Length: 230
Image (tube, rainbow, N blue to C red):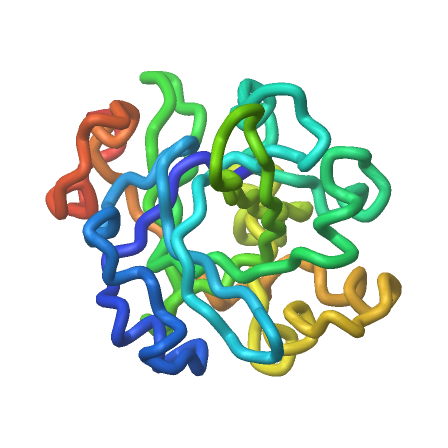
């Protein structure tokens, strides 16, 4: 799964990598700042296609289906299994029409050691942002004037390298796969072919402080390498 991630890059860098015009970027909002420990229920930028243009918009992490009676379901829907997202009631409408990309500098995963669970920071070797496949939805709370827009991150089986840390990993899109994923005309079979593990040699990881386990900790120092078990 993916339960915490990092997005420390400036909006300009995100725009450049994902081909977004300044006028379609709302991530400069006062709600957004570089984040070193993004957690479910918090707001983060996602890339989505609206009227044929890529937008960088702020959405809340933890998907709320349009039919939900209340928002409590969102904490159970921070991730969607790519193998079943197209058919699960909570995700199938978004899979058809509301696909997005979630930018990240990296993400955290916890490895079980004799001394307890050790967090690791995982990122691309080439320094590029991760383009994690996601789904988004809008939900209209009763009596509210505006909908709540939320997202989830798709996961897949871990590649051989990742299995040393966890048996699942985010779906990371590369190259033309990003445009294919965002394409509203893409067929389900075409989309399913994109939902595969990243190559074994593309990521690297190192242990970090267990302080990352506390959602209130959100400082650059969380990315400092630490001795395993500390």
